Length: 286
Ligand SMILES: [Zn+2]
Image (cartoon, rainbow, N blue to C red; front, side, top):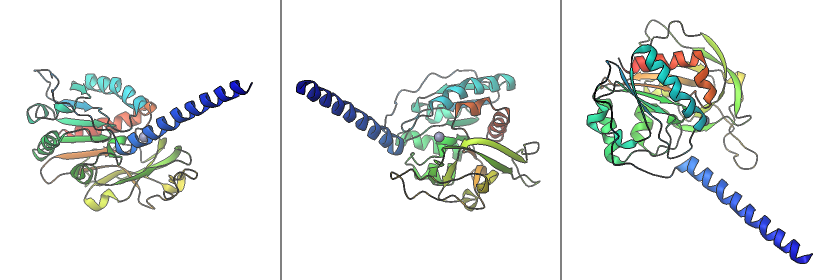
């Protein structure tokens, strides 16, 4: 009997250790990422339509698997309806001057972590400085990228946390659209209530010259990112002005559009969200 208890205890402790190691690895990967880089570029089609889009879904930190999986057929359908060429890859080596120049828009599709080597980062920077188009979705704006230029110039706000009480909440978003908007916002819903894992940023992208398309009303959800005794310093939001989708024309002529919406796969089944993304892609690539 004693031996049985002893064996059971060993099994229990071993399983516990495995669980603890896995959780620790998951948290580390989500927060800091594990670098993994490619050197051999993918083959891309030699013939492209007038409007061509690169969908880059590489993750070296947290992977929004459901969203990424659901987004690909949604983008394929969008491309078909609008006669775009679409190239989908997780290969960071596509970030070279020659291949990037083939695309009107590069979508960072929930791409997280440090995903590019220095030379690949420089190629993307040059692409944007030459008038390229960037579309960032949700995780593309989290705090895992470890690349100052990207966070400051492409996203324009530093990520703090996301809602955790609970993680997914219904909230109201308000449209900002007037005659000075270069983004085609006419016809988007003025008020839009939807469920999301709401991102909170340390700073307001408005201060860096980004123009919000939607802000989220913090009176309609709880932005706290506190989690029991594990996270205790994230009980805050962004106050009365909480941008959640925004855009900016860069001095170089490049264009950046970022949507913090898009955690769940179901987002890519929402007609209104797909319409917003389509507008973002077209605007970024004009
Ligand atoms: Zn998320």
